[in-house]
Length: 195
Image 1 (cartoon, rainbow, N blue to C red):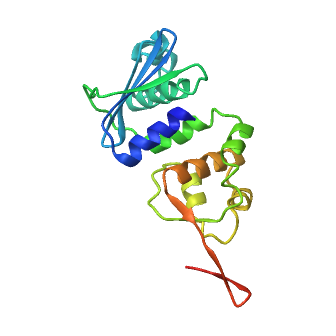
Image 2 (cartoon, rainbow, N blue to C red):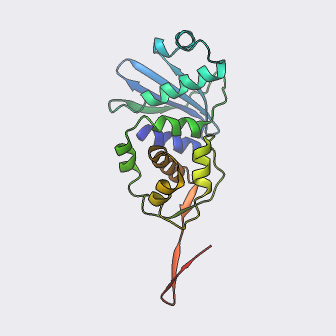
Image 3 (cartoon, rainbow, N blue to C red):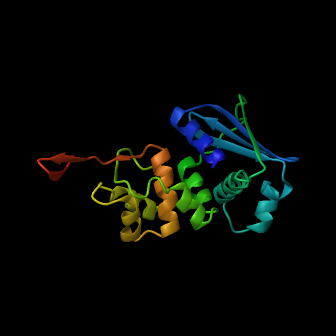
């Protein structure tokens, strides 16, 4: 998750620059402007536009670009990758929903890996504090209904969201600072929910 956490840092800090990911001779480049992913590049022939168009002939240009970016992000999760930052600027800019791409890419992890990543968050109560940048309706509904009344793990199980997607959404929302801990106060030996 080192790569994802670095991308989240770029998003939160609204950074400009490039993240370079190397695995042997394979190279992926991710360009950011104002914290948004604006371009991806790689030296992998099967990830180039022509190869993707052959593989997905019915896909639109935007769908191909999104699929290309998603594939490149997912390949950056390898345990043998080397990650570095560069000050390079994108030669052109493409509009991506960076948060949604990251969230979708997290689905490559197993449910157990996501459970482990979100373990410290599972029992806490959260409420939404920021606008939700995801385009997936089930993720938006899940986060929008977080009001701190129940622990996050119970909320995942009772909200109707796919469990694995709920874990990934919870993890992303926490690290993107979209949610905050909901505080319970003790007053005269009675629990009072603070609003």
